[in-house]
Image (cartoon, rainbow, N blue to C red; front, side, top):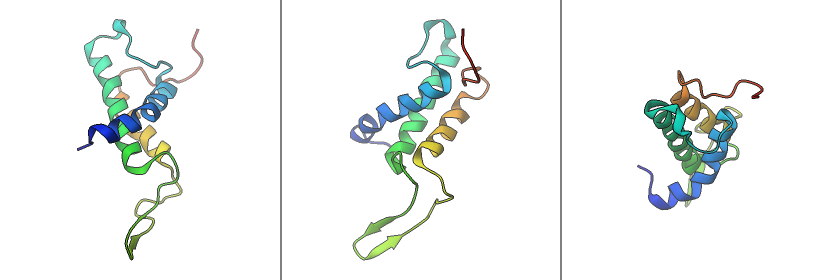
Length: 102
């Protein structure tokens, strides 16, 4: 569960991430409820990832003398993991930006 403070801190990066995928920074009233909900879920999924990993390289952590490294280091970044999480929520909605818009 994501605490309110962590969500608020991660929200700007999450909105940027989903905006880059969809071409819009907010829900469009013409989308309908299910598509609008998918956009919101995508933002929440991205925020969850950014709260856990940040935007930079995914790596390990240290607590005192105990450390874990590369627990999810496949040469990836938090932004890439967030993008994947957001795309999973956007699947089937037609919102994932795939080229030029008129």
